[in-house]
Length: 168
Image (cartoon, rainbow, N blue to C red):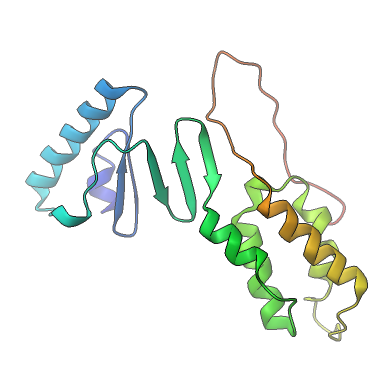
């Protein structure tokens, strides 16, 4: 699949999902035609029932993409919001994994998860306390804030921010 899509500008594929995009409708249509031509040559077949063309919004791999930018999927944020406090190391590691996946929406994530990650270190006995609960709740609240990442615009000033800290 990756080899096929590498021949198609304006396409993105994750597992069996393929998205075609463009800066405008004409570019989208050219990219879609290119994908269809390459798919035909390579024997790639699409399921008609799962094909949606010219959508204004696309849900892909836990994110929603639209004209305004990239947003966390509300289903995912609701799932995280409703998570109970971890009762053991495995549950904490699962939570931290989900949070890491959403990291681009959480400024200074390493600082906010430092107390939680400290519980995952070897030779540290599990002892969930109020500082852990406070950090857990803060991270959940931050994920559930209405936030979006905008697309890069070369005509606007840019600043590079990295999640570097003494904690991460």
